[in-house]
Length: 523
Ligand SMILES: *[C@@H]1O[C@H](CO)[C@@H](O)[C@H](O)[C@H]1NC(C)=O
Ligand SMILES: *[C@@H]1O[C@H](CO)[C@@H](O)[C@H](O)[C@H]1NC(C)=O
Image 1: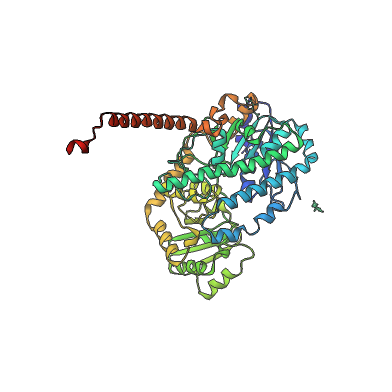
Image 2: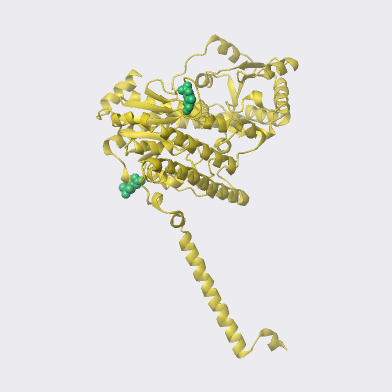
């Protein structure tokens, strides 16, 4: 760390910059990735403020260890209230539909309205005279707040692989024939005819849902500043777009020069030794250990009973492996079931030292939900995975893992004795998964420029040069009709239509004039 600091102080001719990171507490993983950005920039010698807007009450968690935190709490309970039943919905439906996604936009923009009612509490942020400000794509309230505070230089954070609404806004090409949309889309980059139809449907739907949300947010700001531009237009002028994904792992796709991949940012290179409790667990199992951690939205305990019992029975039969399952604090039934079924090869835990345990040589498989943060960490540690996607980008991330040959997908509604046993055995026993994982991890580590270097150097470049207009793609300013050349296609169809009409007219005219038709000739 000292050398890193020294390195940046010597290399960076730049005076320390003032940086704002806008970080709504949508979920723990969002705070983690925003916190890693902030901490990396602090390490490089910059003055960083993380502005946390409390959407979800995550107690004291901020995601940053080094930056100054300013927190706005008790904004509105709307987001928490609206998200209340969503875990049950996600458990019983394969994917969220557009109605639920529109409702999310509604909820997020209502939060923005509640936040701006207290805009006087934001005023003191103007005094910092920030050079640049980061915000994420989940809703565009951050983009609005940043402009409201008079900060002109906006930098994007895409917390998932590049969202469709972002790519559309920034003019990043997203050919629907092989770039699957990010959210709620269980497709990889090889799609058959029907899958491509579905992908186009998801693409158009994403953009419409996003327009609805961004128009509502624009209206919030126009209430206080009448000539406030549409937040989509402000977003389109962002200098850079940092993407929390890794191009070696991710599905390959076209990007523009603004797109900087920083996946794996802040994941420590050196591994801390495990404590004695986890060391002991990791020594169990003849062939090694499997970890199951399905995340906080659908933890293991909330799976339907038949699925849970099926998985536990399968585990009992996989006796050469030891299983470590992360459960929620409220979960008491899982332990009861394990005792009833008399299973010996399971340990339960409420917490995991994830980045360190992933590096343990006896860890053979990680069964997880496929959120991009955890997935990049797992891929960096060369651990094969079984992905149980829950929502958002996780379906598509699962297909990405399959493409790279480092794991398999198990859909949440299919979880049961047979499906679990089959997929887990396949990844454990087919050597190719581990070999591919080693190659991917090696390349992720060895590729030119680390995520930290990329983030710091590009941010400093934006601080020194102001808004990077030269990188703006003209496509970001075109309307939908011109962007997709719909007018040109309409014109071409019209011309073809008129010409064929004329030909038909002439042919028919000739026929009646000379009265020669083939049938008459024959007679
Ligand atoms: C939160 O806000 C509500 C009204 O907006 C207020 O009644 C309540 O006292 C606040 N709670 C805290 C802890 O500040
Ligand atoms: C975006 O950038 C263009 C070119 O500099 C400028 O004319 C336009 O006003 C900007 N739009 C917004 C909303 O800032």
